[in-house]
Image (cartoon, rainbow, N blue to C red; front, top):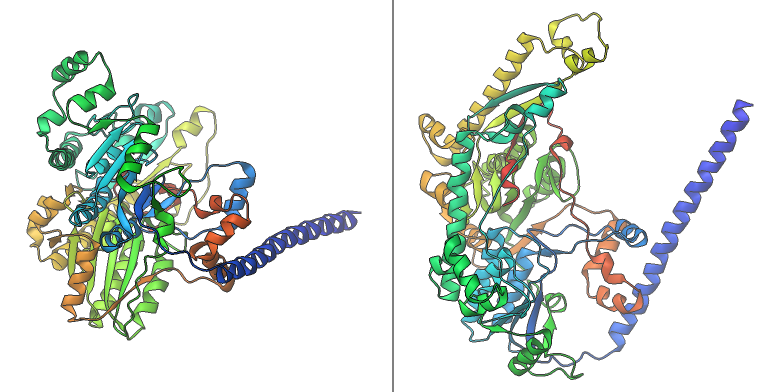
Length: 608
């Protein structure tokens, strides 16, 4: 009887698997058919002559260092379930498009539509802003329009020659803020015993579990670098708008008086005090754009080139036997293999091995945007960089928004480190943390007993941590911290005795890091690539971006989404554009799998 029931369930399961595989294969077959149709349509239709118009930048998604690979099945599931998906825009693609538009005679200006731009790090916005400044040298106008400008949106909009705002909108400039929740009292009430192991009084990641407020050292650090970021914001925006910083962000009493003078009307306030140039309704803004760039053939809008369409024309056509390999290290650092929203050590190592074994690769440039993670995984990646250097291939690091803790660990021994003035870096420290529940279980009458062959075997979440084990773990953490200091000392040429002054978990801006020797030069990714070329005396070279290897099926799907064919498919398959982005999933510390339970991670850095 049981065997019969088992066979029934086995048959049922095989049937379900067959149906699932059939649906997936039919879907892929449909895609192949649509591709063939799309290719025929593309090849048969004559190319339309280019039309002069503005480059329309509608940045309504997350700006990232590198877009994730498209997972069509996940996107299809999101569409069927009605889940919203967030677009991703590659920071360097945006910059490349602006650079090409600067010399493109078919681009007559830029229109910035930033009303749906989510909160973005100041470093990324500044990188785009610098590209906009170079674009303005061409004499072509930049126009920004929005119904409303939040602080980060206004930062980028301030680079425009003409800044338009809806009469019912406002410009919200409020300063910067960082707050964390603290759980000590809650943990005490639950009778959970937390075990904290750390080195560095400024390594504040563990503070929410052992305190009810921020320590003086952590608060001083936070104030130090946040004040610098805020001052950089005010300096940039006030220069762009030709306003004094005090005028841009007045004292609360002065702000209140100004608002009273316009009866509390935020839009009128922005116009009266020079934050914007003109109040326009949507229809009026359309007319301003038509007057500036000309009317489209259908009379519905102004002459324009959509950024996503224009991006298809931007490509690096240069080929050379001399390669500069570029790898983007974006996200938290974890062990094993993983998706592209984390720096999974084994995945990164396989990419680096391909470059290391390629005789055409003359230099390696690493773009780091990471708050850290597993200490063990960080060292695996840094060791691989060292293998490049041992082979005579220089390693150049370009720091993005954040390169702190483990993000700095992997960078520390590079031949040259570049950072932006507002990059968040440092946080050189190590910690370990876990909890035991012996007291909480005792409260409800649960106890444990048994036998162990040694004290080390007594480590368990359901019993008290032996004192000897506690000391062993602390010694191990201190050893890891000393290794970290030694790496930085040798890599950056800083005396080991001076390291405590800049380590102990302290967080620095890129400008601070330049002053104390943690970075070598201020600059962006292009500066790092130029330096790599100069260092290796390359006049002709090709930059090759390293990405995880795909199997044949994944490669086919990726080509569908990344090629010109996708444009034709948009008209053939309903809601095709919804398959162009993948919702970002930020990793949690619980996902880390360091074999020693040691992490170099900067939680407060993530939001900046």
